[in-house]
Image (cartoon, rainbow, N blue to C red):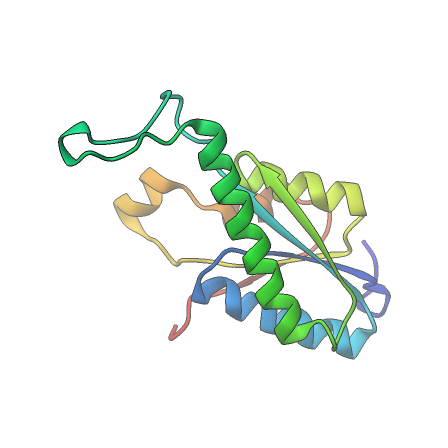
Length: 156
């Protein structure tokens, strides 16, 4: 494991949430202090395997899976744009949009870029909610090849 002085590449897992916003703030602060580069990764789940989603009783137009994926990609690009507008002048930032299970995609990007540190926020779910939804941060922390900084939910 690298020493803290040699953290050159920080991977921050992002989504459009307050949990992610805190992780970004920590990541940017660390990158500025350490002179590191930042890579952002946003993973979209694979859309459900139905040919369309609509309610014919409400006269809704069906959305095909490719259209859903385009909407997800556009939302990811807008998220990255907002982050770059807020922090892009402070540090060098690269973007990665992936489709798949978040923990798998975060770890894959971390390997691809040879991340020295992974930062992500946590929703702080417990009990049955944690059992049902799992924990992306917990899975990443267990399987990562580099240190992982997990930022707790706001107000904890």
